[in-house]
Length: 195
Image 1 (tube, rainbow, N blue to C red):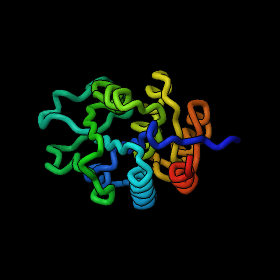
Image 2: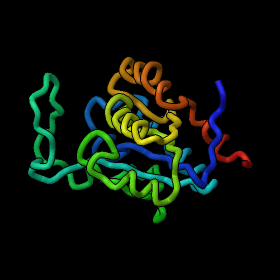
Image 3: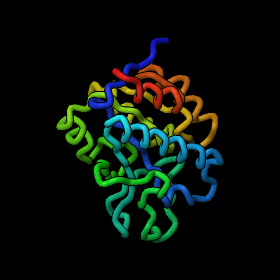
């Protein structure tokens, strides 16, 4: 297994849905604090190395009219009005003025946003992906990135799924077909290596 070579000037660290409303959801993954800590490490390394941090959060209009409403066997339930800080990023990410902020209304970070435009205009061709949920927002973003030709590195310990099994399925069966799966420490070392 070859190590991904990361040129920070052509790399973005894309963090999916690490926001207050999701962090406080009942039944949130017990691995969530570790995911946040590792995502924060990746962002700090990106900032030191000159890579581009991208923070993605999800939300919608107060009346829910801009959300999808298809009939499904397991609908995503939203009970009542969301708190005003629901889409705010968790403070551990240390949001900076130079971070690209992407607001999405669906699972993937490319659909209906200017993420692709922001990356391409900066000459960024490699994406390091992390966040939650592995098999929903992260995987949807990864599939779209793959079809758009981006190189991808997946920080397996900086993401969590709805269940350990669903996380493992994506990490073991899906992501290796779209890029390189690595641990946070390996990615930090690769980002900070002298190229």
